[in-house]
Image (cartoon, rainbow, N blue to C red; front, side, top):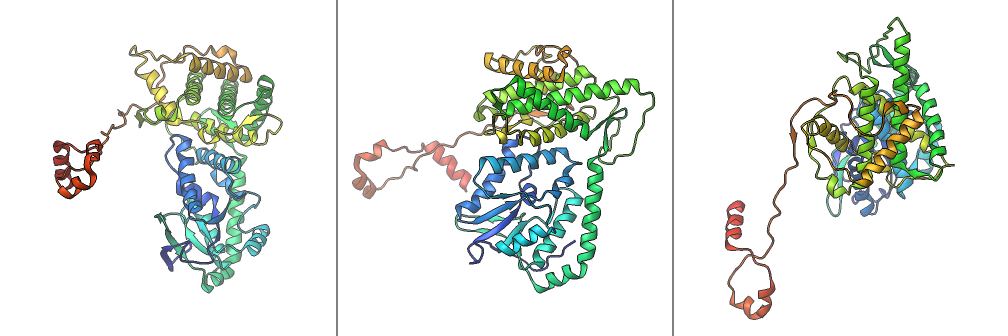
Amino acid sequence: MVVLPMTQYSSILNDFVESEFFVIDGDSLLVRCMCTQGPFLSFIYTVECFLNDFIQKGARFIIVFFKDVEQMYFSQPYLLFLRTMLIQHLDRNTDLILHTEFSNCLSPEWQIFLKESYPYFMVISDMGLTSIQTDYLNIFLSHTLSKKINVVLALGEESDILRIHAYHVQSMYGHKVFFTVYEKDILRAWETMLKHLTEFKDAELFLYKHLKFNVRMMQEEVCQAISLLKDLWPEGSDIRCAFCVLTCAVGLKIYKSMLEKAKVTDEIKREPLEQWNEKDTGEGLTMDEVADLCRIQCLSVAFLCSLPLSQRAQIRIIKSCWTVQVFPFIKMLQRCDYLVLKYLNVANDWKLDFTYLADLRDNFLWKNLVCYYELEYCAGLKLELGKDIQNCYQYLWNTATTIAGLCDLGEAFPVRNTPKLFLQQTEITDKECTDVPSFGLIPIKSDIVEDYAGTILEDLSFLSRYIYFHFEYWYL
């Protein structure tokens, strides 16, 4: 753990003449802007607001994502996908300078880059999303300070119109001495960490007690599915539709394969895998239940492509979590998400529109539809989809089952064919609607004002005496 005794809270741009150029660590940016598992658009919006604050104040910076750091997220597939989406969005949909060619902060190529560019400071987080990431970030901090480069902590910054204030660590001679003394230990720790992460990357993963899959097999299925989709949609596609179809197709096909292997295998082998930590997950989901879950995901993407943000912003808040039987399958789909996005990014021979890369899926919308079919639909409340949403949904589902070779799973309608509950039963609340405050001038009597303004006062909006009274009472 790196100790930062000389941390100062100061203006990081205006108070330092040399701070015209700096580096933002992309993974620290991810930690800084990480939010709940809601719409991906909310996360990207938070990132862009943070970066735009620097841009508006005339700052000049680059963002770096190290290749080896990706392996730290393999036990957290949602974060792995979120990181991949962030990199692709910044690269494709912004004018920011992005570097992804460096392996890690200790590589010779990175040392050369630092000598040539010599940034005044780096924005790095001192805390990670996992314990192993925190260890890595502390190595990064120690190495950066030893190179006579100052550090700005990614967490705790505040800004106003003119300045951005943050915790600033000045590089000192002691930092160089510390890294020199412990350099061999740090390198050994990093190599051990990387070796452990590489082994986990190639391991077989258990979904349930009797179902397991291999990540390499999933990679092959994703590549094959993309090839089939290119043949079905030679004219190209919106990234949201292609992403949804491929994720559902690969998820359905792999789950079907796991169920078939489990029937053939007499012995149940279970190796301890800490990352799943499964408890009472039961026998998992049936193929029909998995199909229902994927149908609703296709329907949510159809809504996503049709509804404006103003309507999506008004959906109710679903605080329910996925049940313990559903959650392992959701994690498997998240691994599909990552691989699909990774290989779509290099599909240069196919026309894909990446404009809506930041809005691939809305988990709030997905859960709202799941909740509707578990509660309101069963109570007789029918949802009118409209022709556009209905046609889009049918198109997505039919394409997904065609690619997976599972047309026997049924048609797009009915959406639900099983009574299985996918969400834990908790309280559901509508978003609070606050009254828009009245705007207007406070009425006063003044001969000078009346003589100066004349009849124009009749055209101005004044607060009523009742509203003015309540305003005074609230203010006091």
